[in-house]
Image (tube, rainbow, N blue to C red; front, side, top):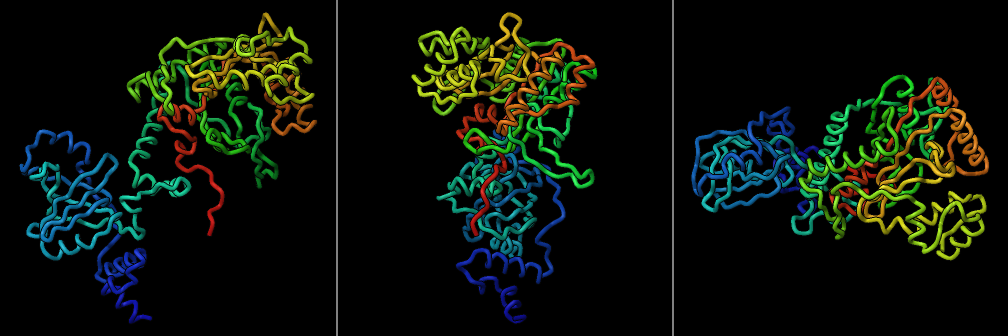
Length: 505
């Protein structure tokens, strides 16, 4: 066995040549046997691909400079022409060619360059030049292996196209599909733009717990975990809302959190159990001020990151130019149904209307829930341009303030774009007596078998009883916003590491 290992280290080609992993492992062993370090500590980078392209854009074809730079990147292409080897390396900003010549680096170093594999990380030091074919390059005096790749990259022509493999091995997806890296770069810039806008509006970014003793702030089924030290069950956050509103009670006037939340529900092109959300609360604000804030956030992000407010999503043109349409749920649903759909109708009439339009209903549904179900079936998918749908029924809005003119409705809106909900907001319910009644109604629904109904949060009620200022609150789905602004069809396309079923052996 020892003799076999020595043979493999001395001659990598003696390894099983149809197994790239074995061949590369043999090369690694050979490097170590020769006393070389295949995994370096660091590398001093003085220039990056994109900056070199910008700085030397006017360098003439065939021209050489005396400007010495130090670059580094992953080898993504290699072309051997005998005494010249062209390497293409990729850094975080783009691709750069290395024009390596045997008479410059020497025979031994040249053979080491020839032995490099696609996927290896290298560093190079040399002068900037432009080849006779017009390719900006670095002509290295030395090329150093920084990290040996043991697994081969997907074939250049077939690429990495299998969707499940792309999601499972996002690191490979990012290597071979630059457009995927562009999507996530855009995502990070969108989040940065949102933070800048919130700061410009006087909001403080805060942090609230991810482990909750009582799940609250949304109607959703939570994940459950156990706290060993306290010997009690906790729930992964389904929303930060109730903690953020406690801060308003404490005297903070404008707060927000870009948070990770978790809901133990289904997976689809629009839903992931773990997702990112912006929640913001403004003392002395209301539903109207939250509409202004939401519109401002999205317009600002689009302008800063995309440079335009006219976008295309999955083949449909969408204008984000303000002001955005505002309309009530009842008027939109009545228009689409061709008749009055409101609280003036009886429960029986609304049920019959649901039957007419093929909308399922249950006996427990009141008028508000029936109207909401009709809206979702008849209207929501038709709203392509940004639309604030306002005045949601109190029955489905346990945390929103009742409308002063119609107690069956709340001062709540949802923002719909391309037929999808992007934001949910309302004038906050600050009456602790009304809030307790609604919590108890939700608790009764939970006892009746509704897994998503809210619990009674007595500490939040206690906070409200100290006095909460009038306020507006808003939640915006970051993942869906990124989908919209990057023209991504599935939420998994904008999540670096989406949840997947266990990989088959």
